[in-house]
Length: 307
Image 1 (cartoon, one colour):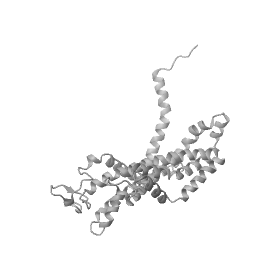
Image 2 (cartoon, one colour):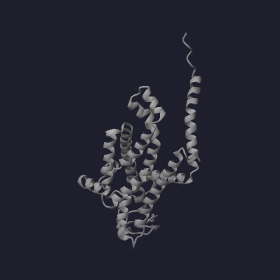
Image 3 (cartoon, helix red, strand yellow):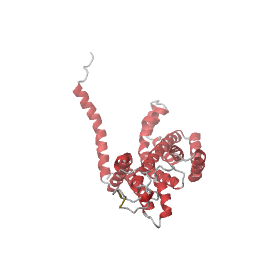
Image 4 (cartoon, helix red, strand yellow):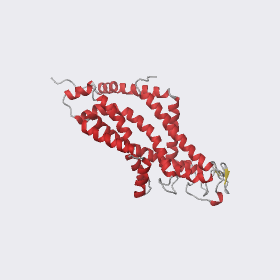
């Protein structure tokens, strides 16, 4: 005799019972994260920078590329002929500095997210394969990692950008392809430990294929350290993008970049201090916020630090 099908209420209760452990785990994670004030401060800084970058056309009424030679090198708080106030002053071409800083967050965050996505995914795949299979596969990938670490990044960036030309896609690809080593080594070290665990051995005994074991059992246990590394690496990528723009190898004018504004302001450092000070502070605050959030995320996700 066929058993009666469960009612809609019974199915809803079953789904709720299944989802409640996941919900409780997320609530516990958020409570632990909320206890770390520095992590919350970093998260707020990153959120503010992201919102300003996305809503830049609505946040400021100034055009970041509009030149007004008659208003060049105005000090912070000065007003133009129309009575509009430049809160952070103007640069050597009369462009509003606050608008340029807000719009300059766009390429910085775009390079940060895109380059970390490329390098993170590449390092995750290579680390999984290298740590799980070992042997010659591991030797080949780790020797490639050693070669990558031995080659100076700035020389690689100068060579590639010199051939292909400076542009946003080229910078993203150069930084992304050259930053996979850290992810691969972190994931590999985790996989070397996970593959010896009982649940992986049980999956082998049940005859599961290697691909399914990697995706279903090994990969979820490596995402926590990978996520922490990706968060902290974004700050490094933003600094690299600013350095390349400072050297003239980043996004080209008239697109505003923090590194490019630093390069323009160094000439006027003794007469117009705000040209280099405020873009430098923008880099400092953004990188500090990402690092604080990354440190807090690492401590929160560490099972040995249940505070």
